[in-house]
Every structure is written in C-alpha cells, then in structure tokens.
Image (cartoon, rainbow, N blue to C red; front, side, top):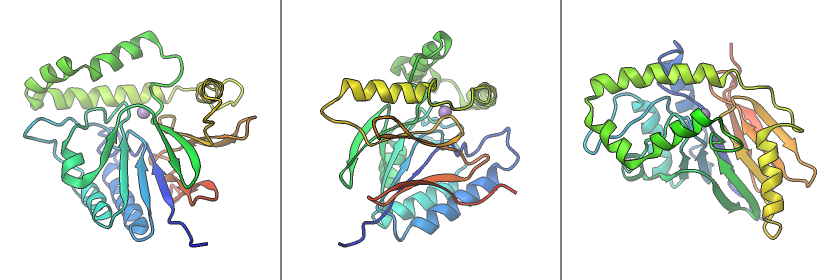
Length: 253
Ligand SMILES: [Mn+2]
C-alpha cells in the first residue's frame, strides 16, 4: 500500500503575546516546524489561539507575524491543505489570510473524515458548560455589529486594550484544573457526542485551549486528544492514517 502523507495538528502558539518575552523566539520555532513538515505533510490543522491577538480591518491588518505567515504561505503553495479553527484569542480572522495565503477558516466544530477515520476538531473554548460571563463575552466577540463598531475605533486604542485583555484572560486560563478523564468537560462532551450520534461515531476528538498534552482512550475506544501548546511543550499531533500520536518539536530549555 502506498504510504499516506501525514496530517499535522497544532494549537495555542499564542504568537505575538506581549506577556511572554520569548514570543519572537517561539515564532522562529514555529517557522522551523512548518519548514520541517512542508515536504511531507498532506494537511495542517491550526486548532486555535495560534495568534495571541488579531483583528482584520477591511483594508488594514495588524503588524507582526511576518515569518510565520510566510512559512504558512510556503506550505500552502506546496499544496498542503491548511485549515485554521479559530480560538478565543484569534477570533477575528475573516477573509484576509483565507484569500492571501489560501487557508480555510472554520469557527466552531469541524467534523471530518481523514484516511477513513472520523475526526471532531475544535479549539474547545465553546465546549462544555461555560461560565455565564465567558458565554456573554463570546457572543459579544462574535457579534457582527459589535465587530463593526470595534473596527471603527482607531487601533491605537483597541490594540493596547486587546493585549491587556489577552494577558488577563491567559492568567485565568492557567487556573483550569488538571485533566481527569472521569470529570473532564472535554471527555464528557465527547461521551455525549457519541451517544447523540450513534450512526457516526467519532474516532478522534482533537482540542486545544487547555495547554496540556492529553491522549486518552474513552470507554468506547475513541480518543480525546488535547494538543498542548507552544509556551511550554512545543507539541503537535501527528496522524498518518494508522495512528495518532502527540509529539514534541523541541523541549523547553
Ligand atoms: Mn484558548
């Protein structure tokens, strides 16, 4: 049988984060990673929070991320299919990267079949029971009218505000509990999904958002994967049609 080209998954790079002095270095690592997979990848899934903050205006985009976008463009030009599932930090990806680089942008859950296995992929910030405040903020952030109003404010006010907001929300995310398969909201979501869709069971649930590396089997044989991050783990998911594994591109020094 002809070997199948692997599929890659990364999330939570938080590039451009102002609270991390290593941001620029991490962008270089991300570029090294993209270069290393360019010749053999079939597809790449960016599972949210790749950028710490992004907001596209109709005619203008924020500065930064040049090398990262360049590496993504090179991948796309080599025929690697790139799908970007938006997270809670990079919510406002509209048509710029889609058209400029050739990326598919997905908001929410993506259910897809890869090499005969069923995948459900999502950043994960909308999964499970959300605290009321977070739910409200999510709907405001995703509201078209609110987005238009925000876009009308000069970025010299919105961008510093957004960076402060982002580091604040990041410190809240750090307070999330350790993964426990019996109580975890992602595992619970996966179990509920399976019972609601008995005709089409999912083989792999792939999430980001939590900044932990998790690869756990549920009782029905499906797997819950949480992709880690690039602040601590430099981790990625690798799937070759045969098995899924979580790997590390490099170790934190
Ligand atoms: Mn997130």
